[in-house]
Amino acid sequence: MPEELIIQQGSPTLAGLKTGSLFSCPYRSERELQEDIARLNRRLAPKGVCLRILRLRRRALLYLYRPGSLRRDLAEAEVAAILREYGYTVDDAERCVEELSERLQESGAFPHEIGLFLGYPAEDVRGFIENRAQDCKYVGCWKVYGDEDAARQRFAAYKKCTDVYCSQWARGRSIERLTVPERFH
Image (cartoon, rainbow, N blue to C red; front, top):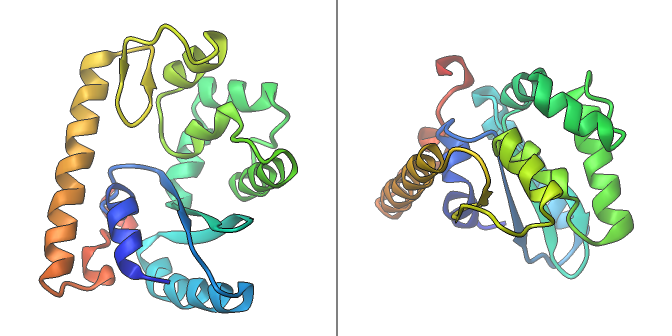
């Protein structure tokens, strides 16, 4: 698995700015992909970051996330309420990720609540669901239904982070050096 893809798609998560990032990745064999992910997890786990496969089809759907951040997100009342409405086991973050993976594999579509696993504001996820993805205030990394100014600032921070990380990667900085340890959050 090309680490460059992780840098391009997951820099805000590696930097601790975002709970998780979701991206697809080509793969030749499931075994090779699993081995690559296991190697990366051995390197990233000490920093509080995990990479896992959510779905395998022609491409692998990968979830790069910070389990500690996800646990904190799931403890928020509105996040927990939305996930409970969809039948998630909100008191167990890892089980929630398993349930998300099962939903992705069963339906093939992206469940609307997936934004909560990526650190999107609950009001934007609820707005997306209730408005059937229509009538948002702004579109950036996600559709904004709540605080547009805060969302624009986050989008700009994510873009700047990705630009800086891609530049540092191109200069030879390792993925471990680019990953901010969990304790600094």
